[in-house]
Length: 296
Image (tube, rainbow, N blue to C red; front, side, top):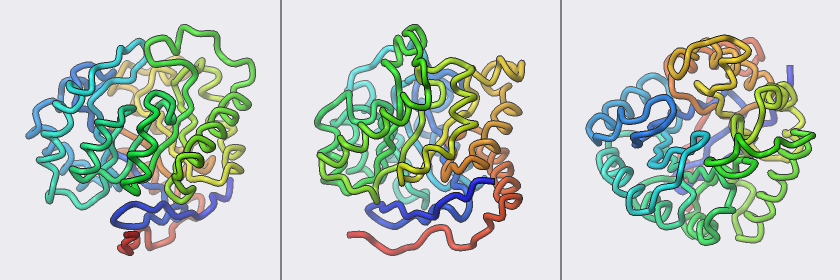
């Protein structure tokens, strides 16, 4: 069992202590076209109910997105993205106590979201799409998730895959870290995501999960998102979307065994239980997870 390093992630309002137990990032898509739950939470009231439910089920972070990045998806304008996420963020203010992450590649969306209470920016392009995004993150003292993606969502599964997926992922993440460093974002605010399902074959997704400990040498917390993704259907034969819950459970347990500090999931109650069992087996039962210490 890989010995996961204990690290700290600094947010504007608190510091998250990582490595004791696995933290659960609950996904809330305010989109009509996300691959597994598109359209369910476009209504801010429905989104609020789901957010409160996920918090009660054990989510440690709530991640809100207003633009689908599923394979084959096309980007939407900042105006459309803002019209989807800002009403939800307004409903969430004062109603949930866990940190909020905004899933966006756009500086204007990130700026509005952090002003409305978000403390983490999850950028699937790892600061490549919008050159202004890094400065927004730096000024807000927000944390950032830098994800490896080969290509762009619209074409990433049509491009030639890397010959050596681990070398490609590590090189991409190192380049992302350098972009963050040049922008003045400290390592203590950075999380890395190997990008399961983003420009990788089924076999490569499985290889990245199996070799996850190799990415620990980059020195940052690792977030892994396998929830309901299509690569689970081939090895496990599971049904699409929510029907992939058992494959998701297996991949989440594998990610935790490999050293993931955070897992990004749709089925919070079920995957929180998976994480508890996996952490117990690994001896990761440390108590304090978060400190209330303010960082500004």
